[in-house]
Image (cartoon, rainbow, N blue to C red; front, top):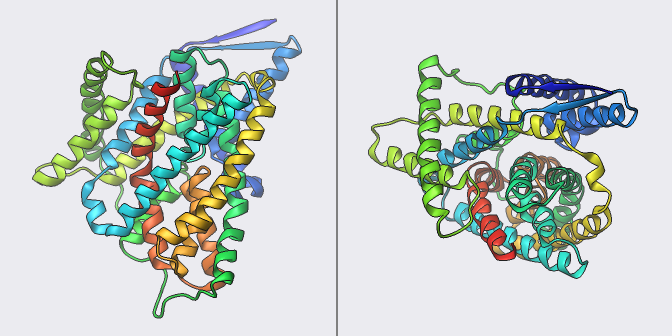
Length: 411
């Protein structure tokens, strides 16, 4: 059998080609676009399936040098840290803070339920985390990142493959249950939009644009494009945060087991908020988003094209059981908790429907759910401010800390 060995640069180049193949396929297969399946997942899964068939047939095998995976993963989470501006919480008002706390609480509950069920089913408790907030609240990006961590540092083979499968499952069901949950609440309490309500504007639209680009980059937003100077400045800030974060992670590692990117994410958050407070350094949020999305897209594509799909077989049934319980948990949480805490009004009902997409994998799914509800029942401007802002700027930060705490508890 012929073996093709690719070095680090060739592996990144192939990942980029696979990524754009995913974009092309997604544009032509409407169901993939409707459920917001990320292009790296589409292209990566297809390549992995073809590679598996060639290997099983004794025709061809690939060997990849994935040395660039970890730096790309750390770069992505550093961009999350740079997006965690406390000033945005003030602009968004108390409802943004409340929903952030609510979403973080759900992430903790998802992990608790996942670990408890994994132990009950007699499988590795780390599978409970993979089917918990790693993929449900975190989606494909967080899933692949922590999957690699669990493979490398905790000897859990197939974690990336399992994470991608769980995240895809969550995306589909998040899109399926959000509309019915919101519709049931609106019908039960006979809710109507607030008088004078209109579509999202201003800051709300900025949050929506960020959410829409959270995992995809094939749509160019309005506004001035970044200059070479701005790109270089932002890249330098990210690299400095990664450097300082590496030193911080090494020091913290003496006391607690942490993913390699935690230090970089924390340092980036400090840099962002010091810059905002001093007003001496302007950090271009759009450029940060662009660089982070590029890093995530290449990381995901590289991780998925090297999947070992046969590793799904042994854990397929227990994983399916845990995921179905997570779907039921999400629906119940949105119906009984999100709706009540966010105000028991029309906007709260729309947010509950959106939370189903948000809590099972992706902010774009949440926006799609809320859009479907508002097209039928009327505008919900508060919902379109609060949920996308938390999804775009804050939940990945708190979720990463929650996951890290659980890993240290169950390892």
